[in-house]
Length: 166
Length: 109
Image (tube, rainbow over all chains, first blue to last red; front, side):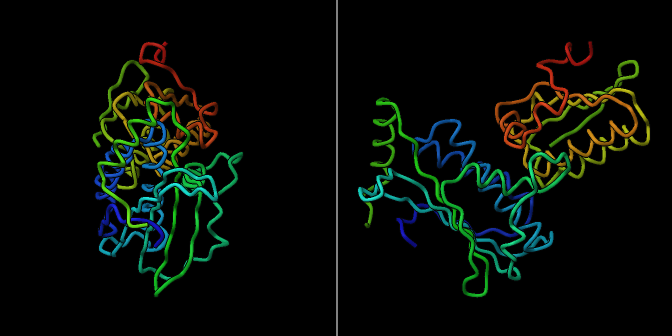
């Protein structure tokens, strides 16, 4: 864990909970000053990541545990990165073969295989590993450079969340 | 999500209200395939104006509808895409594959 915990959700692998997670992500990214397009993009990535867990890790079994943590990342002078959000998704399903996490070619017109593309297109970092008997997916999204007005709004939004512990 | 069907002449219009995601995309798929493969309706139109969000499983259902329409020689049309739905189809490089219109009048013309 490399940031300050903003939010932790524990849910079951019930697809009817996806709209609840989306609503939460939409509000969170909005409060943090993400643009409307970024809010949609981040929400989509988290939604698709949880959908993948439900479908592929848990094979559509509806009562399995999923944990989502959202952490705030502070600007890093060395890398030049600004504020960001880190999403940690943990499930207790069997080990997933990373080689199978490729998605399909986009020039093929066939159903399925799009979720990973949406995640990769939305996020700046996508990492997967097996840890403590579960699958851990780490997603990071950095805020894009903002216009002066938006930057002020973001500073106020982030200041409202209090000081960081880093 | 709610999905209901209207019939105008030889056109079936599906009015969809709500998000299309893993919880309900099988219902969309079933409705589309029934109309296209079983009823062989020559034109099936999806009213997406009240669909705020569609995920990859929903897109997969639309792709199945498109493929079924091609198999039976029907037209499968979408109209009223929200910004989110349009983005998803763009990201999956499917926006130009589907027949998409802004409103119902264009879709029925």
